[in-house]
Length: 417
Ligand SMILES: Nc1ncnc2c1ncn2[C@@H]1O[C@H](COP(=O)(O)OP(=O)(O)O)[C@@H](O)[C@H]1O
Ligand SMILES: [Mg+2]
Image (cartoon, rainbow, N blue to C red; front, side, top):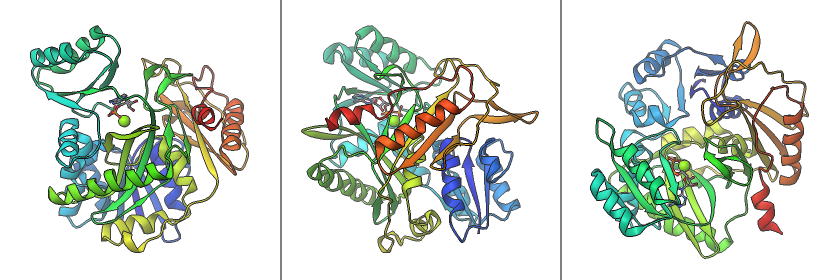
């Protein structure tokens, strides 16, 4: 089978590596890919529009397309491929609204009585500011539309909340936002495969989102991940399955939405409570980098089962090891950052994989081309060893001025003691 992965980041590199393990995959393409992906797959240049990707899939006689990022899903890539009879993995345009519109997501959660933070949606600035006066801080302001991880402000000061509201609603084309109650707790990423009827859970992962150690600094796309995390008690795990996942799947059915693909459920967990923060309609980045290396079942088989509605017959097998991914970012990220920094990756330990997120080749030299540049991932027989191996490799990589967090995994160690 000829498989094409859409995207250019670390998540896509991890998906390509997992698909290459499948016996039935003969060739893997990636559109557009990056310098690391180019070492293991054929990269295809593209402007990443739905029409160009459709043309590429036909030109290259692709048997299955796997969509990494949310942009093309929300733009309707799945509908376009299906209309032409091409196989594609991911939810259609309507189903992708769960991520594409936070207003849609919150009203879905409310309609189906799924636990989430109390909220109100606004298009009108005065009404939003009036509501802010009433509820006070801490409070969370969310741009309803896709914002590449930059649309959410967790405000501890009213002024911060006010300027977030003004920023979103002053857009000339008119904006929309959600104001929701601040939830304390620890976050966990619960990813599931869904085939429209059944679902199969993946291992729980945890992302470290802020730029600096101790969860300080700006939100980023994710500075590191670990899996599996034992953050939910058995009772909480059952609660999530019953009150969140099963109600979500039933709600989708009731609303006549066919959801096929990966559903990423962002959860906020305290000792006494679990609530949905958001849904994403695809694999997480950098969660995928730690979850897929622990998947023992053939990923292609799972994806085909999802597309054909046979997930109930498919058993997922997981390694009993653990994985950690440390993101090496360009200096300045998530603000403006330097590009074209030369990088040298030496021979590393066997249990380490350097996943590329933002790299390219410049006259034969590997250089940085994005904010998040590498995801150094290690698998070991326990989490402490995986984290230690990943950091050893980070130290060995020549990447001048690289910014990375030194405390990936430490939250969990705190809860363990
Ligand atoms: N209600 C909330 N209470 C506390 N923190 C929140 C809340 N909603 C979001 N956050 C924080 O903001 C981050 C981004 O919010 P999220 O809803 O996941 O939007 P997106 O990923 O689209 O930017 C979350 O990962 C979490 O750290
Ligand atoms: Mg999120």
